[in-house]
Each structure stands twice: as C-alpha cells, then as structure tokens.
Length: 549
Image (cartoon, rainbow, N blue to C red):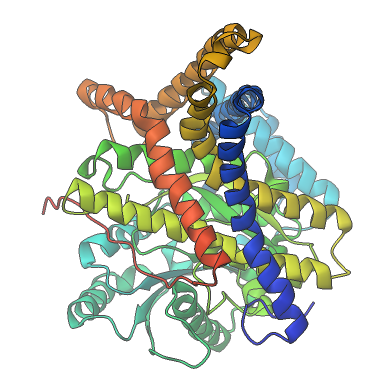
C-alpha cells in the first residue's frame, strides 16, 4: 500500500492519531513506575505482594531467555562448520546437492558438522518442495553501503579490508561509501585514499557524496544511505544488472563482517522462496575495541548481542537492527530508508512490512558482524557516549506511532499480525523502560515504608524465603550469561587470557546497576522526549580505540 512513513506532511486526523501514540509509551512507562511507587507508600503490603509476583515473573522470563540464548548460541557455533561457497555453487542442482549432503563423509565429522549438514539438508529439501528455483549464483551481486560522516580511516578500513579478504568473490561486490559532503577534509582524504587502495579488489568502489540540507531531509544516516543507494541503482541499471538479483547491505561505518558473511548471506537469499520480500539479519557483536573500554561498557553491549541472539530464535517477530541486508528490488519498491528518522535500521523493516501488506519477513542468518563499543577518553566520557547511544537506540520508539497509524489504515494486513506486532512493540518499549526501575529501586520500597506493620504479617515471613528461591534462580541465569559471554568471546578472533576471563566475569556483577543506568534510564528519557514532542536529532556515536599502528 502507499503509506507516508513519516510524522511529517500528515492531515489533521493523522496528526491526532500520531500524537496519541507518541504520548502512549511514555505515559504507560511513567504510570507503571510512579504507580508502583505510590502504592508502595500508601499500601506497602499490597505492593510487597505485587513485587514478589513481578520478580517471580521476571525470573521466569529470564529462564525463558536463557534457554533460547543457549539454543541460539549453539546454532551460531554450528553454522561456523558450514562450507558456504561449496553450498551456493551447488545450488543449480538441488537433487545432486541433497544427495551429496546425504552421503557419509569419508572424513570423520564432528557433532557440530553433522548437525550443520542435517540443517542444510532440511533447508534445501524444503526449498525443493516449494518448486521455487534459486537464482544462478553467478548472477547474484552485492551492494555494500557504508555511511561515513566523521569516522577516521582506522575505524573504516578494517571493515573494507575484511570484505575484500572474505570467501565470497569480490568481483560481484559493489562497495559504496556514502560520504557526507559536510565531512571534514581529513575524512574525505581518508575515504578517497581507501578507494585508491581497494578499488581493484571489488567489482566497483563508488564514493557518493551526499549534499547537505536537501529539502525534506534531516541529518540522519538514512538520508545519506538513501542518496548512495539511488546512485548505486543507477550504476546497476547502466550495467544491466537486474535489481532482483542484487542484495544490499547497509553497515555502520565501524562494521567488520565475518569472512563468511557474504557467502552465508547469499545462501540464505537463495533458499528463501520470497527472497525479494525479506531482510536478512546477522548477529551484531562488539569485539572491535573490547578491551579499550571499561567493564560496564563491555557488559551492556554484550547484553545487546544476547538480546539479538534470543530474537533470532523467533523469526516471525524479528525486526532488523543495526547492520542488515535486504533485496535491492524491495529497497527500491518501498522508497529506500526514511530520510527524516533516526532509527532507519528498524524503520526500513516496518516500511517494507506495511508496503507489502504484512507479507514481509526477517530471516536470521547465524553469522556475525562486529562493531565498536561506544567509548571515550575517560570512563566518564565512555559512560556519557554510551548513554547517548542507548538513548538513540531507544528512540526506535518513534516507529511505534507511525506503525500504529499504518495498522489503523491498512486493511490488507491481517488482524493477527496487527495485534501480535502491536503487543510486541508496546511490551518491548515499556519493559525496556520499566523493568530495571521496578527490580532495582521500587522493589525496595514496600519493606522500607511498611515499618513495624510489615513485621507482624505472614508476608514478612514468606517474603525472604520466596526471594531466596528467586535469587537462586536469577543467579543461575546470570551464570549462564557469564559462561556464554566467555564462550562467545573465545570463539571470536580474540583469544582471552585467564586474567581477561576473570575480569570479564567480575564485569557481570554490576549488571543490575549498569542496566538501570545505561538501558532503562535512556529508554525512559527517549520516551519522555517523544511524549513531550521534543524530537531528537541524529548524532554520530564516538568510536574510541587504542591504536596500535
């Protein structure tokens, strides 16, 4: 459907709907936090019972998430055993490929390799049943868009170098640096130096300068990426390359893709029957400057990776986040990324979902893209930069009023999908803003305000025992997170020494305070700004590394 995916240029009725849903998330979050605080003062015994039930609910939710975190991490480890290029080169004959995968290998396989082969057999057999023929791999091309505003060469180059050294043939890869025209002379000089160095490694290396102050655009990454994508589209047209055979990936400037990324992405594109109506979401990890930042910074961003790992186990509800890929054909049909929104990575999913009347999906791909943890010259500077980054992530709530307005106007989207995604959006943003407040702060109020009255109740005797059980369960969940975080780091290019592993385990002890300060408070900050109509502007996150050149 044709839909104005923007809060601008709306009629009076649309403005009223939009404003209502801009107010709703912040109002609900503040209502829950302040409501529980008031009840804790006025009726502390009631509040104590509610908080015990809430903490139990949270622990059960933690156990649920830990289970699927383990499943997703295992899948990520298994996928690393796959020879992606061999698979995609054999996709021209599915029967032969299935037979090859069914034949016992002459070389002994590890358990992970056996599981990987079984997964591949099931996926290819499912594709064959649909009757959909995968495209010829030789005709598939990739466009990589890298928006650059003020990032220096030592931030940008590792990602370019990694893609050039990947297993996928780079003579089918068009690399596009989306350079802001307002960038400094030094940044521009670095970009053109990188073009001179790496141009011969790719099918093409384009530098597209995005003019400043185009009417209707805000200073956001989506505007820059859209300008570059339009130029890349013209280049593809001139070369006679059809858009339906092109996969476009929009990366952050510091993104370093795994060497198998493009091959893995190509495989999932080929086995997805509705490949031009799908986005492809890798697992974001934050390895690039892991040991150049304080412990609280490591924990909060590893937590973000955990969240994405859990999300990947439920593709029906998955939404694109950070660096992602999609069909170039779909990108053109939906009108590219929004040019006036900060949260372009999630907005492109919603824009596509609405455009195709709900017939759009996100396919999880179990390979990683590594990025920088936001940093600074000091611990305080790092804290401030992370806070601003998490508030910008939480500003994804700007999608909610637009999506709700679209749901009210879109008869083509099924009622089930409208209800499911509406509930998910509200649950995600309100939980993000309130959970830590309730667990870390409000949870202490009932006992404090009840005084002697509390000591004579059954709840006084039951609460410590209930909380002991809950604490033991939550501690077990924390241990799972610790172990998986160590394993996730140890399977990367980083090799952790014992001292680093021990240090990282201690990092996790501060997780309740870290989540409150660098997750819930930025989230309630973003929702309050939206509720009051104080719209945020995009600011590039500072990247800090200890250079070793």
